[in-house]
Length: 47
Figure 1 (cartoon, helix red, strand yellow):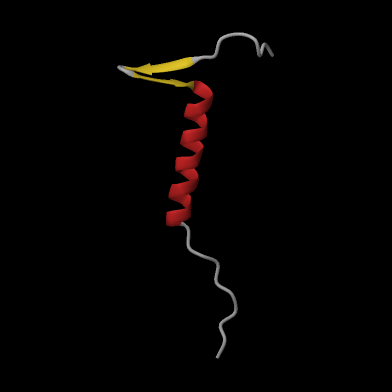
Figure 2 (cartoon, one colour):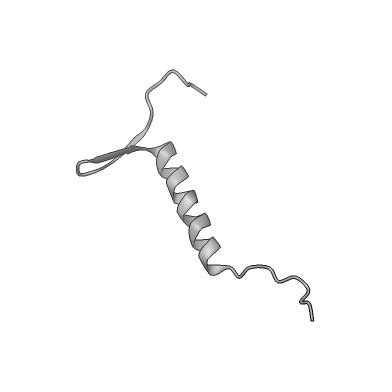
């Protein structure tokens, strides 16, 4: 793996972001949505 080369960048108009940062942002968004949608685990209820 060549770490001295230039990175791969994605372009959307005036927005420019590296592919690695885009992957990190997408993974963070997926984890955030899953945290909102998945229910909290329920422990034993006390009486």
